[in-house]
Image 1: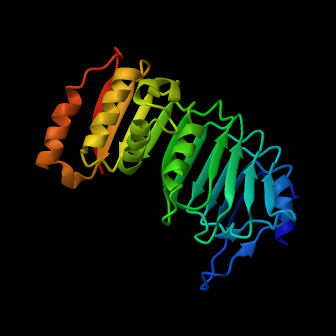
Image 2: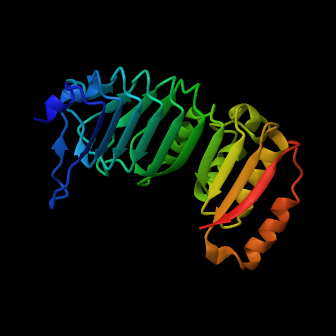
Image 3: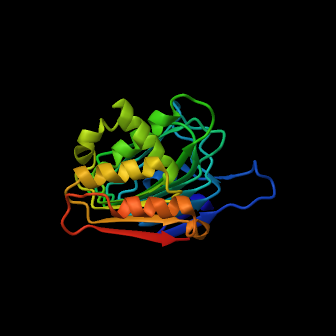
Length: 266
């Protein structure tokens, strides 16, 4: 029985559910949320436990250090909280397309966070005082007017991060927020919005004005910035637009004395 796995002496557990029917998922037992011995959990295409009568589920495994959720069903839940006290690595990939479940991660020891894919509902990252790296590539699907604010809320939750990887699309959203003085404040307060930030990677770069403006603000405001990497597709290498972008990029003034700016190709 699956439930016996969560009360066993196992330290590492990976569960994947495969079915020819996209609507069939293997549901995890409630014992998943309080497994006392497991240090690493990875789920692919499973359904999370039922939760309480209010549709709330709290994962609080006392020894859990690594959690990965990929394509998991959560549409039966209203709120999913991740509060494992020893959690150091959290990865979330593509949530249930029918879900409106809100997700909260509250783990003071969390050091690495990855969120990638299409998501629904609200995501709140709280008390992440130990966060070192964050890779945020989230798209909130649908035409909900709150989607922009949801993205900004995610970024505000990772404010203590040292190394941040974001796609060009998200840079544009951040610039709109800064221009409006919403979520992250305005450009003059960007250094306080990310007080520990030292490394930034912009993925899927197209050499846009928004990217250049964002980088210029970082270079002007963030004193501790050490490295900025721009990643673009190889097809952009000989582009006239990108060539001009690179010239402007490397001529930007900066306050950090040992800053490294690089361009990589994929």
